[in-house]
Picture (cartoon, rainbow, N blue to C red):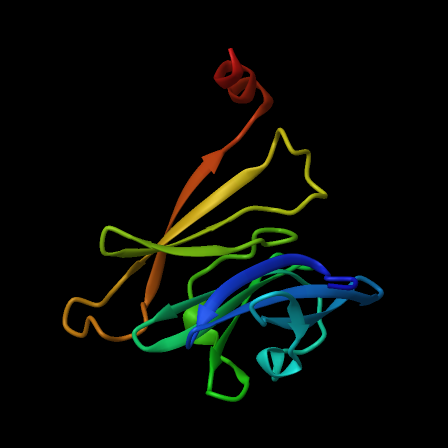
Length: 172
């Protein structure tokens, strides 16, 4: 795969493996680039990034929830989140999926996963922050009690901090 880009996310959609990553354009702006696994190599696939614009993206995560594909991208400046929904042929802006997520300051790097009946998003700042002083933020979706099939109305933060002192204690 020539010049594969950075901050990849890999997912299997409809029996095909896809990889979406970022390629530097200019002035700290990145474009999404897509690949599809052929069984022996990664092949360029511009269709899987259709609808995603050039911006100050930092990283992205793709997940399937309630029969819909979502992509959440973190921004570099500021550290906000952008949400997208797959229409079947392109990604379309979907601010509702990131409603309630705060600005993390810079270089938001999201990852979404499902555990024990709850959806979680964990994110932290990017490489501009001292790696021993990073703060990682965790969010879980809270659904309205009367309509559990709706997109969440709020995200509740949980903060985890990694410091050099806790790192040295863990290595002892």
